[in-house]
Image (cartoon, rainbow, N blue to C red):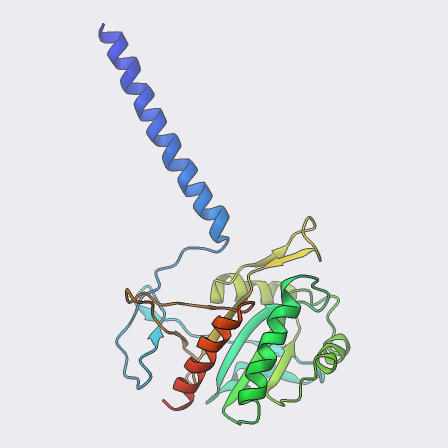
Length: 230
């Protein structure tokens, strides 16, 4: 009888452990990027938008230096004192990138004439997306703002900025259309280089804006206005 109860107890432990492993594996599979401790921080601001906190520090846009569609060297310093939106894309993307950049065009039309607004579009396929390719891409979309830079450079640096710096997944995947996989998020950066977002009804930061959804672009537009007037 004792052996019977021991066997039942062992079976229960194994079952509970299996459920734990499966749940965590599914979470990782669905989120792609690393789970980080984003929370609201009380820094002085006038907008009411949230700062994103990791290890008790407000997260800033990582420093970067890349080449734009006009073959000019562009860095985060060029975005100093600007509110700007960050995305990751590639020109041969057959799925979400065209939708993302058509939505980004609505932001350019609304804010593109302002000196204190900008857009940074980082290609995740830099071996193909040369400055010449990016320039043609920008022209095809009718981009006119001098502050919308399509940026290319070393792939490992771009991926490090996406996956570690901003926690927006980007990677190579030969099994998906176009050969690259990425999240269609837009990140909002304030004039001091901090990541910002609105909060949900429960006080949790939105973190990123879905670049393929028009209703999200409307929210993003409202929040850009808040930061421009902060």
